[in-house]
Length: 193
Image (cartoon, rainbow, N blue to C red; front, side, top):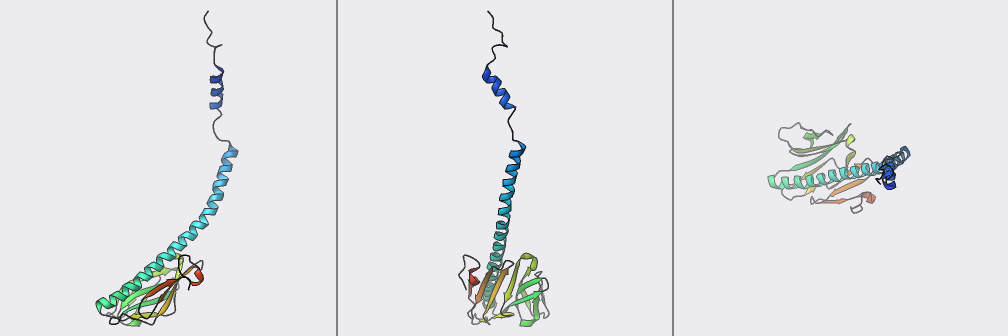
């Protein structure tokens, strides 16, 4: 007796056909996942912005420390007095490395250097516009690097300050050596000044 194919259908195949049509996510499940992702992003974005600010501050501090050593070695190599001059304008702060007379060169927060005396020669100008989130504060307006002795007059402290208040300080002694620290330990990884 021949078997009727319609009556011999296996129940397991029928059940699997029903479940394959029910796969997917409900609207509630999707909303829950999106809510969790939004909460995690809300927590991560401020932490990422703080990390960006810290890296920007450390980058400018490292560049300034390198420039101080560079201008000191330029003075000795070229056997000329070299200057590190600090300035500010309405848009931010700046520093300038130059030769020649002390007061004949200025810099802008845009990074431009201008010397009124043709005998003066700008070596490098760095601008720190306010929108960058880092500003410069020095207790001297200029530092003179002597070519014969390799000394610095006057000694000084230079602070790089982030908008959040985190500060990295370079202390340049009379011998032209730079010591880096963080006032009140505001930046981890640096000694406290």
